[in-house]
Structure formats: C-alpha cells, structure tokens
Amino acid sequence: MSPEPERSHKPFVSLGYVASEWFMAILRMKVYELIDHTADIGIKVWGRTKKELFQNAAEAMFDLIVDKKTVKIKRTVKLNLKAPDIRELFVSWLRELLYQYSAKRMIFKKITVTDSSDTQINASASGEKIDNKRHIFKNDLKAVTYHGLDIKKTKAGWQTQVIFDV
Image (tube, rainbow, N blue to C red; front, side, top):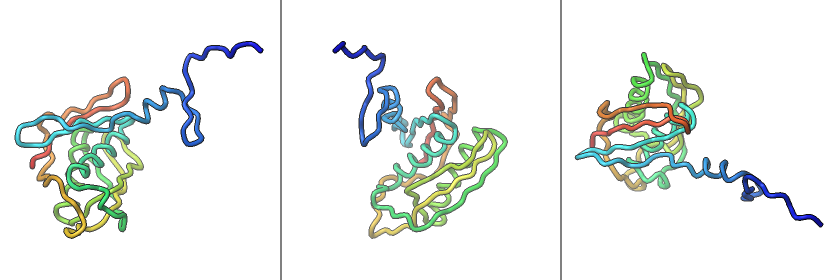
C-alpha cells in the first residue's frame, strides 16, 4: 500500500461537514471589536459583503445596548431606507435602529439584510418590546455619529468604524 499523497490544505471535520482550514478561518472571522474613544463607545466592524457589514454593525450595536441572550423574538420590523451614498445610508441605518430602540422601545436579537446597494437597504429586525424586569442593559447609546466614520473595501471584504454618543 502506497502512502497517502500530501495535501496542500488539511480538511477539517465538524458536525458532519468537511471544510478546508481557509474556510474555517472565515467562519471564525471577527465580526466586530470595541475601539478606544474618550467618553463615547466606538466599534470596528467587518463583513465579507456590504450586506454583511450592515448586518454585523446593527447586531454589534444591539450587543452594546443589551445582553441579547435575554431577548426573545416576538415581532419583526421591516426596514427600507434610501440615502445619497453609502456613508449616509450606513448612518441612517443605525440611526433608524436606534430610533426603534429609544422611541418605539424595541430591542432586536436578529437582524437580516435582504437587499442593499450604496444607496438603499431592505432588512428585517426581529426582537421584542423592552421588558425592564427581564432584559439586562449594558450601555445607553444616545446617537450614531459621523466622527471617525470610515467605510472601505478591503482584501477580505468590507470594514467600517463608527462612534456612538453615550
């Protein structure tokens, strides 16, 4: 019996799926991280596509607001926004979600972007009304700012950074 040929990438078996180490690295890709900012909260967000970037930013924002393990999915809100460019759209997107939280008292556990371009986004956000007895709040975000806002295409996909007033 001859020895098995050497492979250029080793397969990884998990939950019945075989994938290359490269694919598993993508699955472990960081979605967002906190950045230092005096008196406010900032995040860097990544996504393989613009849709994923917008979705990850929204989910990161709600991670900053509430312990999402305490949130149940009871209601879904459809969101459709337009703006003159991607920068305006990104800020409008997060501001609309923050409005849903602060004015309509909704918190979201799952956000799905169904369609997007540089000037429009269609999405759904699923969660429930605020329940102060059950939900564990972390930060009270007041506003989405343009300060330090940077949205750019990278080799791995898309990246942005955004600062929230607290």
